Amino acid sequence: MPALLARYRPVLAASLAILGVLATGFALAPLLTGLDPQLAGSIAGTTAAQREVRIAVSHTPLSTPVILAQQLGFFKDAGVDVRLIEYNGGDLTFDAMINGEVDLATSSDSVVVFNSFKHRDFVLLGTFVHSDNDIKIITRNSRQITSARDLAGTTAAVIKGSASEYFLSTFLTIEGIVPDQVTTVDKSAGEMHKALKSGEVDSIVVWEPFAYRILQQEQQSVAPLDTKALYSLTFNLVSSRSFADDNQQLISNILRAIRTANRFIYAEPEKSKDIIQAYLQLDKQFVDWLWSDYLFSLTLNESLVLTLEEQANWAINSGLLDEQQAPDFRLVIDSRAYDRMKRDLRD
Image (cartoon, rainbow, N blue to C red):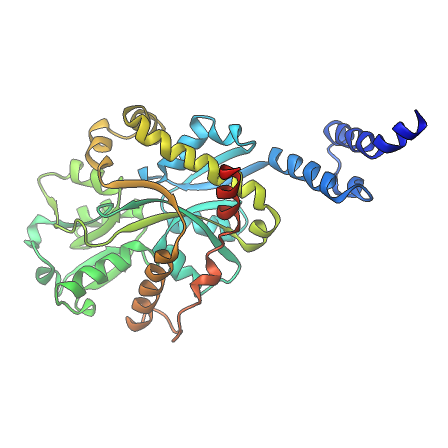
């Protein structure tokens, strides 16, 4: 009997340590000292999974997989307690993450590109949706703008340092218009409607659902340009580098929950749309209208690096940045948790 007690003493000690933490809230790490490394790691991982994880989500249907994972309990099923915090755009969610207000954020590829020149302490963990029609260029009818050529000499509102700015420049360049021929004004997504309605600007470049709402409310005075399939926007999960380093299993579990949500979207599209419509307080007609533009799939591959490099080179060549060399985006993309998720699924 003494030998048996001695054999299981570390396990008993660990169990008492956990009970002590639950009762008092004290840190667990000091209590794990001296335990078998594998056992200690397992206990630490369990308590880490129980902590609340704050995720900043952009107020857009592009955030659907993350919202569904929370609303349908997929995060909880993966052992993660998640709180979603809404912002009006991926630029604001990224700022919240980099400022330590949240642990993770959903952001577009353009936001990742612009911030990669300013910050080296963040990583991209996975892409969960693509869309080739999420961003719209909406113009005032009174200006009779029906093509890129008509935009020359006008004023456009964009969200600086985001997919909005990149989208306008790409559209103009493809159509043979020098981007400098259009004066741009920096506005937030929430300020776009007022700027267009008042005549402060002649056009706006904004993402959904803001574009749809403006088009519905100003049907007689504004119109969108035909830009579908011009640019495929991605929405991605990002975090600080230190958070990723310290929470690999936790992030892997989060990615697995998002993957489950994506599979649910294709299995139950109508239920998925109903949940997003209610959560984001959107019109059913709007959700139906844009749903086919979205490709919900959790990925992390080399093509993303090429996309980021292309946008970075555009920003440099356009004179939007002082830097003359793009960051190495292979260092921005962190595939450790994504690869762990795939291993866990295989096992």
